[in-house]
Image (cartoon, rainbow, N blue to C red; front, side):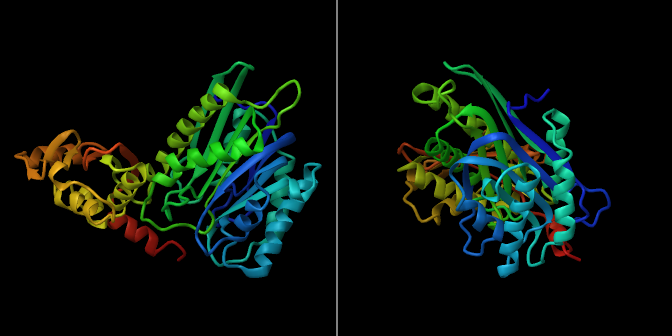
Length: 397
């Protein structure tokens, strides 16, 4: 049973944007009262119109909702694309009794095609009449943001602080074009916890750095990546979280975002393995992050995992060219808890045992120690196989 944060309603409908008949492709997430919004977005220089619009509207303390379409990214669409994004917020706001500036917009799908605005307007109108606050309405909204996803990606948390109880609820979509920073494709988190806009933005960025910025599928950063948090606006009777309450909330938000983020590479297009990479012993966390990222983006590492090949040299060499200091004579590697390399020396191991450990589980865990420093990081990625190539070679045809 999903606990829906108080004051939020959801809808997802079919507007005919997607080619598959009846597929939901327009979603609304609406706050009954003005709420706090924070956002983290792609750093790609080629940016979709919805991102350009939404990022200038966050953080905010007067947002009313988000309108989302799937099946069309509204990216690389010039001035018309910008106008269409503005129009989506205007139509959604009008249907919900708000002003256009109180809505954010997200789009996902194929790049370089204009939105079919007649269908979009009709979908938004239909969604505004289908809003509800139960689990079914939330799941309809989740369905409306998906494209190549094999299933829904959701997570929830309930917590208690000195003020009272609150809920966190999140959805995301993405299975391809995943490469930090950002790497979410689309993600939305709502909470009835009261937050100051500055605190909301800071905690969301921190959560993104530990979750969505630590995943990849093929390292291809999207033009549309958006992570948005909607939270209750503080009042005199419901003041903003601060001190230990805010720290506790940040921990809950981190956990929820990590849970959501891992679902993306776990659903990577054509993927047969989720690869979890732990790096420790680096001089700094940033150095550890660079090493983990280098391993995660190595096609040779990915293909080795696909084939169950215990070719561990690919892993340590990827660490070596990450561009940050390591101590080779202190470097150690474990693959699925099996020691393969230690103190710069190869260790005896049974290749068949390691291969079986890879082939026998969807999750492959790489643990690499590169020295005595305090820096550590974790990344998640996928393997790379012929199904991924087939899927993406036929995506638009």
